[in-house]
Amino acid sequence: MLVTVTRGIRGAALVVAWVVAAGIGGCGGSQSARDQDVEPETSADRAGLTATLQRSTLFETRRSLRLTVRSNSGEEREIGAIQLESALFEPVEPEARNARVPPAGRPVVMGLPFGTVRCDGHSGGGDAEEDNAAVLLADVDGHDVRVPIEQRPNDLLVELHGTECAAAAVLADVDLRLGDTWRPTDPRTLEGELDLSQRRDGAEATVQAVEGNVIFTVSDATASPRALAVSDAHPSATAPIAITASRCDPHALIEYKRTFIFTASIQANSDEPARVDIKAEGAARRALEDLLTSCLG
Image (cartoon, rainbow, N blue to C red; front, side, top):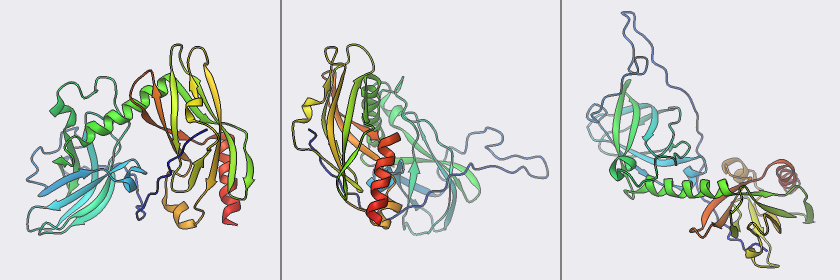
């Protein structure tokens, strides 16, 4: 029923610590910029840094982008915390880094978290330059600074925003979930069902494909995925699905952060297909956890 494309993800592990950066008042009653709700310095000269942003499969499993930072002076810089400022995404708490950026332009690469997408009022159709602007808010050598970010490509955030808003629009119309009944067909494979249903009258959607991930392969070649479609005439539909544990090694299980998340391509209301996450929950999650446990032996 579902044609599957299995994607591999390579990369080393990145351990991410989340903290809220706090300022400490001095003895004379002075306060940091954060305590006073004062904007960090606009000029990047104080930071002595340049920053570029790219997409990375490794970092995006942790909902982060690949940030490359260089010192544009002959001095080492110490970064205590980082945060993305963008009109297209909700802000997230500053992330502690304690990274040292060496002089002479040698780069330091780290993940820069991005928040929940803002779809209402930020469609990318207004002031394109303002919508796409990205700023790195950072604690550099103990000072709060703002560093303009160069995006590669230059519409990186607008493209990511469009992808996530398209998925949100689909999920406002339909619900796609893994069913509750699963049975083993061999030591590493479970068979169950994928359920699609309308969230509102008039919604029409077709599941075109379902993809697995680094840990699990998804497959079912018994029929076309177009059999999984909903409309007012058929507000819900179910299709069989087979999930195989293709990797059970502890290294992959520890490092990969989307173990129980699959991806579907869904065309809704004659729009372009959108990529939507399917998170295994409830009975499906428990069945897959048991499968991995037995696979590990």
